[in-house]
Image (tube, rainbow over all chains, first blue to last red; front, side, top):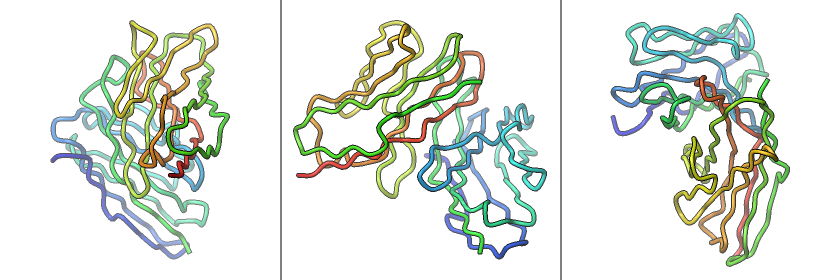
Length: 116
Length: 113
């Protein structure tokens, strides 16, 4: 597609509910990232995939957070037993290849999660 | 660990004023540096990036940034701002051999006509 697509754009979840956020990266992009952006803060790194391999999940805040990219394209971020502190915008981003060597990361519009 | 500091949290300017937003990073090795902009209701967009070469980088919409290695800084500048520059600006860094972008907390810019 033309850009990184995320769904749902807005999600209200009751505390304790499980949620799944989907990301469709730019076609052909090898690298896929998830970031969390709380109100008034910069994006915080959660996890990173290269194709289907999850190479870095050091930013996932707890074991309630789980991400997958089984076929190396679409990715899903799952949050189990949501808590109020999980309320944030979840940003997905993709890049053609290794960003450390010159490639740009492109961001989606984000999924706004509110836990009530 | 890498970190990014943006000292100006909220900047208010009149149109045609000059802009400089500060960004300092903490990392001892080779880095790549970025400025992203987020217009109201829109996604993060790349303004400019530095990977190597000329430390003065020119981006879109008349923005530029200068990498000063000795000061660990990558300040964003624009000689004359417009109302349409009203947005949130984020500085980001990654080590040259990693893919993880580390962002600053952002600077909110408001430009009044």
